[in-house]
Image 1: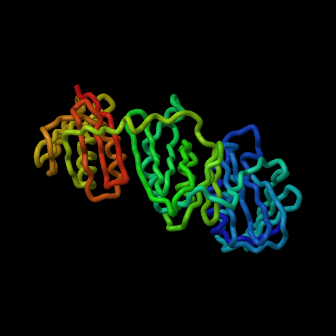
Image 2 (image 1 turned 120 degrees about the vertical axis):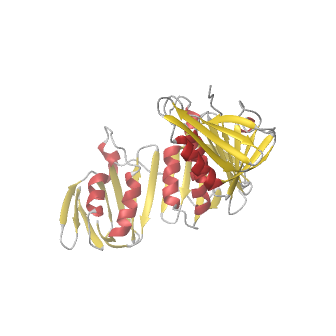
Image 3 (image 1 turned 30 degrees about the horizontal axis):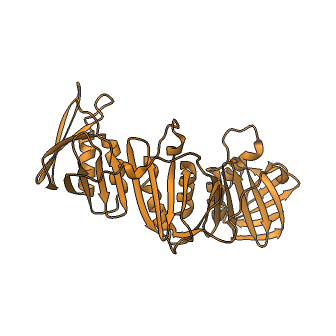
Length: 365
């Protein structure tokens, strides 16, 4: 195999591969990237046996077709440190030579036949979505997934496809984030799957926030996402996702309308005087005014005020400020509404019609 490839294109591909290859494994081939030079392009493959990726590099001149299996960390480091516009990669048996205008590296690889298979997307997609739409939806849900794995199903994000709508839902048991987005065309049938957080993060990287269309295909145990250059395939989370519809309050009796960025700023201010023992911030709502108070024993107290629109009876309620900030940072509307049923009931944050966030209150004593 022998190719001349643009360094920037190699850097993009290997950067994505680095997020997939196994860090520690008894199988050295899983720490490698497989390169296939054929049909005028270079395809890079990586897998950890749960997630796989195929990345097509078209900015390449194929001088000799072939395959190679090369340690990903070594190859990635050499490419990152290169200042040349192009690099020549030449492989003879299991030895790879990388040559630039003033550099030459030799890496010892493995037999490409030892590399496990990586799923291909196929021809037909179950649905298509604009990458900027999906990127925003992932940002509005991924933060709310469970970090501990006591309940495996909630360590992923629920995907629901129906007609022209895509819905993503995430929860860690203390909060729930739901967002909706439009598909490019109506899906032929309803689909549902729980997608692991690592795969969600990789999809976000592949999507990149551009306006390109992403193809989505749900196999029996895998989700596949296709962009212009890459195909990601990952195993789905097995288990039953909680009945999230039952968690979203439908009988709220009080409603506040707040400027999103101002509210975020006030929450951050109030959080300055909290600690491990007193993580909560008290929010006192009344017509026209919101007062935020916090205290850290042996440290001090804070009182922050903001003007708001408020409907309902005055209300005092406590929340973890970090959990509130997480939602406000991804809300892409100028204002949000905050709805309540009582001081011990969940709060409901809405940003427009496509983002809903449910948050359990904390006991302030």
